Amino acid sequence: MDSLVSVILISYNHAEYVITAVESVFKQTYKNWELIIMENGSTDGSQKLLQKYEINPRVRIVYGEKNIWPSHIQNKSIKYANGDFISFLASDDYYLPEKLEKQMKCFEKLSSEWGVVYSPHINLNVFTGIQTKMDCISVSGDILKDLFTLPHSGFINCYTPMIRKECLERYTCYEDLWTEGENLFLKIAIKYKFFCLDEPVLVMRVHDRNEGFAGRRNCELNQIILTRLMELPEFPEEYIKYVRARLATLMAMYAWQELRLGTDAEWARQKLYVAVSTYWKQLFKPRIIIGMSLSFLPAKLRACLNNCVNNVLRRRITFSYADRNDS
Image (cartoon, rainbow, N blue to C red; front, side):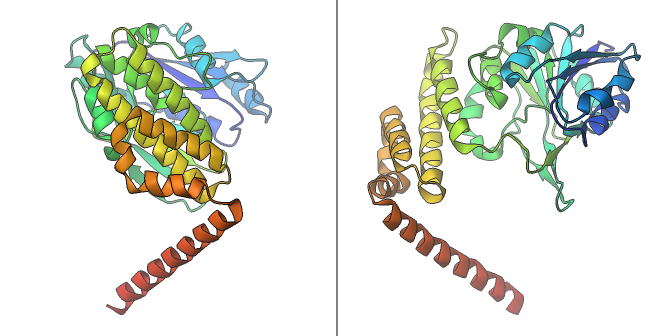
């Protein structure tokens, strides 16, 4: 198979990283690709750095006058793609050299009902230089149910997959939401099979400007996306119970984080109510019971209890570390 692959690089204010991202595409062992750079209104000099690629016939740069939501720019980018397969890349990450080749070799053996080939990735901590392989759910075939029942195995990173273009044309991003992230794969998995290539193909930088760690925003997005997913006419009715269980677990998790690390007890209480009303078995979870109790306490008392718990946990970690050293 020598199909054209459209690599879509979304660039925004990563002047120190974007050239490495672009060059990682040029270093691919698979040669039949085009690079579409969606420059999303950067203000840090990224646009000037990218200008040198304008003369390359394999590169198309689409400059945006202002920054727009990731959901908008992803939908927009698909319209520029000429390839039957699409691979996304963020401007602060980079591909390993055989990324495209290995995933396209998988597609050579797969029929058209297979829409996605995905892989794990490597996290690179820019402060320590430490690289860590991040596992992802490792299943192939009809994986819709697995995406809800095996979340502890890891998620599908947005930038590791190779995706048939028709999948992204059929299931576009919700443009009234900031982003869908990996939740987009939940829609694609309704109709298409997934294949797991269990080899890292991407290095993802972890730095102080990553946008994937805003807890409350992610909570609201997950609540909306999972609710809409259950409302899709083509969504299998027998899987709704798994979505409800997953939604309830996420709401409880975000509520607990807010009670332990944040200050908005009322918001946390609302999410606990959502968790219980969505999936009644959550009512018997210790975190729900304790969390609901914490949410009614005065802020100062709640903070005092959290500090006490943190101190106990710190001592336990210290003692455990000392015991290992003594042995």
